[in-house]
Amino acid sequence: MYFNYSQVPNGYPYLPSPYHQQPYPRYPNYFHNNQSYDGVRQPVRGQATWTQGGAVTQCGIPWSTNSYMSAAVGNNSPYQCGQTIKVKNLSNQKAVLVTVVDQVPNYPANKINLHRKAFEALGADVASGIINVEIIASPELEEEKWGKYLLEIVIAAYPNYKVTDYSKLSTQQNGNQMREDYKFVLQSPQETINIQGTVVYNPSTDRIISINFKEI
Figure 1 (cartoon, rainbow, N blue to C red):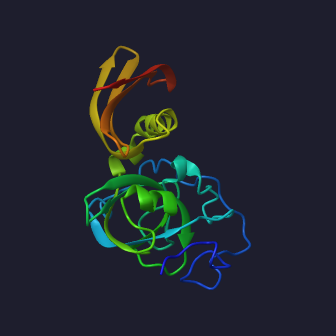
Figure 2: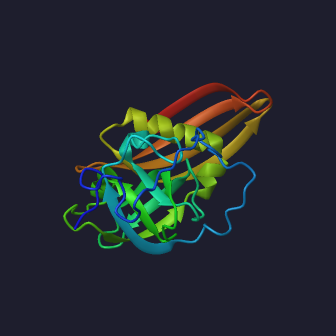
């Protein structure tokens, strides 16, 4: 049995009505500045289901975010709205970075409901409905707003690829200019490529001086 919005009137199979009439904050705590991630740095093994998504989310973030590489988590989980989470399919080791766009009351912290496109990006058969996964937050990326910014550009620039991993390569300061380099791993059905993203900005004004991407 698989879980999707088209067959379940209220969207989620595990609650009679996950949504309540209340204002939805727009991208709350998007970069999670000055927060501790000690509790979510370690991988958590659990299970992933899939959904077609819905028009309304508790986070106020559409399911189409991040080219549908998006997910719902429990409202008591350590993962917050707008946060980036790495999900790995334990059966084939395929991974993808997803954005938390929805929260569900009383949903276990070690379970995640992926958009169907993210579920398929993990090489999973939607007919199976559920797979065993490893979940880990991306705290370094969340703490580095320029890394998050570059990630969004990479996603838009390579629509046929899924971002499966990232790493911060270096930080250099030269006078009133700061340079940050990041590496992003992108995967398509045909190939895997590595992209280096570089942003140069003025740390005093937070204004971007230049942005550059190249395959490495």
